[in-house]
Length: 609
Image 1: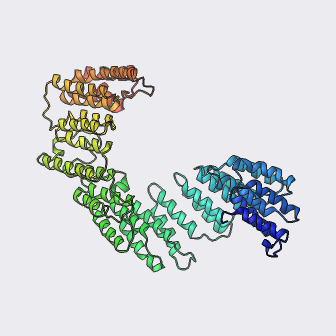
Image 2 (image 1 turned 90 degrees about the vertical axis):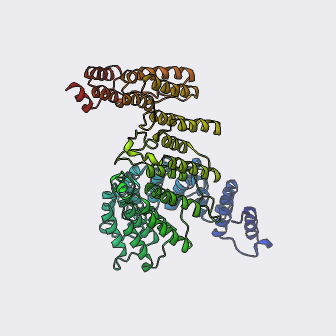
Image 3 (image 1 turned 90 degrees about the horizontal axis):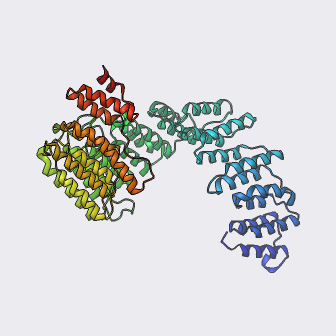
């Protein structure tokens, strides 16, 4: 075990032949086992086989030594060795040998080989060795590792049907498989828990109950009440089950995922009554819980214009408490906290976290400011200075057009100054702006009517990095910016068409292929300005441009411009808004018959009724 296998063999020989190096000690089965283990663990399998033959010739059993060698065999050789060893060495394929072979195939091997494992099981059965709970547990763990829990559960059901009696570890593994399934199969897990107690007369331990809590938390939405019931069972002084640190982190996670961070904190505070000290894991869960938007957690979207249902200030208090206890937060938690302050339009506090928490010299390399953190702060600027109506996305984040009442026009210079300061801080921190940085900033400029400033940033990103970021999104934002209510765009169709043409020409020159969003954005820009002929002509124009680009770039991937229901609905609504119902009907037929696009019933009824 000290990486000196040959020295081990020398000692064995000295003992066997009564030489001075053997110190007069007799050779036993254990002597051979130790020497064979030394050689096998160091990869000298040929020598290990020679020692095993010597062990057999000396009249000792070699079952244990054989298992040691088998464990270190390449997975491709496990089955052939098993098949030949019964005749060559007189090895009995008992439960221990079977278990060792499965470990070699499913645990030691980088990729579990379930096909070979099935062959090994069949071989064992052919000599009268059935699968036991330990071997079944190894198999189920492999199924779980390969993300095939359904097959594992089927295998377990066959195992039980063969009248085999499962032990606690095997049943724990089965329940973990139900919990790991997406979505978690909690009714089956509950049924297995019940069978564990009634049919198999086994008492669930902390590991099993912790897994049940985790499973209820994974349900959509989280089944908080059931998770709390299991937690109460663990905490019941008469249950003979003691909570672990994971018990508290699991229930805190469930509560926080349901927007109930205050209750989670109360439970974490009670840990010391059970003799367990809260760790960084528990604090990180609470920090993320307080940082989450509660209505977004419950409903899937945020109802707030500026988020008021998270509590980042409480997260900051807990962060200071962690530091006082000598505990360290992780980078994901800090990102959650920064995002919470940004969602609450408190960008100054978000920046202070970067400057005061993440710039400490004692921090590890993974706890440093990142580009994504500054991108969150840029999005915080959107929330801080834009006043979107409920459910609307900003042009910088979702590509939708802003209306004048959604923008605080008087704050334009403040917005630009704050954006410039954030970009400068990124540069001073040695961080490189990415696609999200550029596209968010371009969106802010365009939303405030500074189209040229956004275009200039796009150009500078090309020069600065000598490569194009995800320019397609940037150009789509710029095209959308042409519709900004704050941009003093000429109402002349020629001027607007020239600007759109200029951007499209630039995309072609930079080898950027337009997509369906590009098409729909251009159509929307022309429709909003009332230029219906230009809007409809854009459809043919973009498809022709795509054909040209495909030929020039010799592109083999699927077409990126595919007219959809939005394409034709925008044109239809534009014509109907101007009282041109015949044109709207013509576009409807064009979409359905020429482009095979099925419009929504609401759009069809507007035209046909």
